[in-house]
Image 1 (cartoon, rainbow, N blue to C red):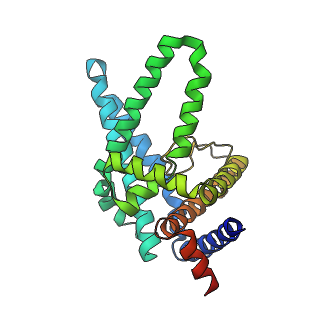
Image 2 (tube, rainbow, N blue to C red):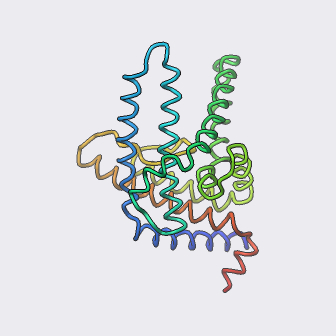
Image 3 (tube, rainbow, N blue to C red):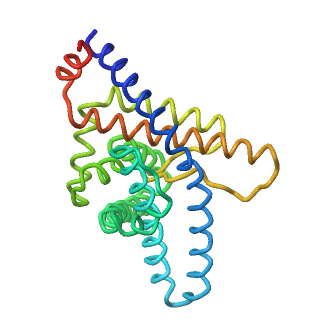
Length: 250
């Protein structure tokens, strides 16, 4: 019974905080298209400048660009969650604020993908289901990595460890809520969020009215989800169920 009461309390708190944040910082919704454009331009420039035998260097640069964009978005979220403040001018500072932590996490994930590729080469088709299960487990067990980065500031290995423990302690509140948001986003936009780091709903430069409306709605729901995640994480990571039950009685 306490778990049900806690679930209701946590989500009521997160919802009220999210509504408050969105009212004052609604422009956060439109960062999605900005990041899509920056990513497209950066990828195009890198592909032109670096090619042939230096292709591996382009891969490193693309990872850096991706890390910088993620860092920028997480910096926006940090300011909104903690200070209820959004300023587009922060985008420049945000590019480097969490850059190396994020790059470290992405590098560890990259090494993990190499191991999965080796497993696939060894087992062949028999490894497909196993690899898919492992990828889903990674997405679930380390789902709170973005929030851990911008709210805790740990090193890459410690980020994985803390995120795992966070999910282990708060799986009911976290996974059910995030699962519902993910399903809604899929139904609205047709896009499945399959990565640990999501900073927007991909804009495919389809300018039909229906697509644009679906994109705006999907991006709005995505922004609500990220704010909701931030407020929920802040509450869950700084309290126990006993403390929350006490707060709920006040």
